[in-house]
Length: 209
Image 1 (cartoon, helix red, strand yellow):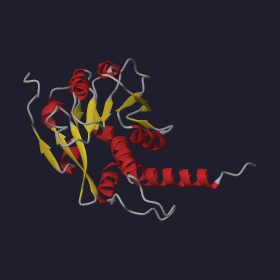
Image 2 (cartoon, one colour):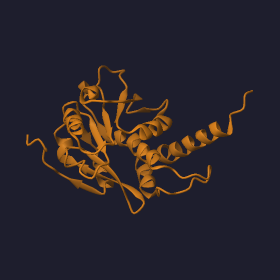
Image 3 (tube, rainbow, N blue to C red):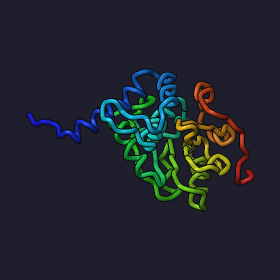
Image 4 (tube, one colour):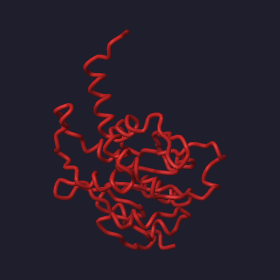
């Protein structure tokens, strides 16, 4: 039998730790645990720290559990739940590690990189890790029309029309929700998610619509 290399064992252990922390303890428990994780906390199994990318990926993995999309968002009953990444290769890589072979809301998970607004057509979740620009504003506008849950990190992400903003505060990952942007889509967010948010705001459409 071929033995796994130390590197592969370490990767497997890190993946198991993430999934053990964020999935097995249940929806509410996993978010409570994530909220308490310090960005610099050391992993007892590997002796290395969880990166911000890994923590953000774990949040992105769990957010869809608290969201409901209209049926027409999917091409058919067997279509996957697709998470798309704009300018966030490290987070996408971490997300791919913890989501491989997993399903959410009864649908298999897929992830892919998008380069432009038009690529967002079949994305149920869009993660943006770029500063404000015409391309980002177009992507957020397109996400609204496509009923994509837009998650980002920039300081002005919510005012630009984003729906959920991730940020580190006191070495802990927090998130804010813009229910105004969500309300302009057909996505329904659970009240449990809103209760876990650091803040919930209702901002107007930046396009003035």
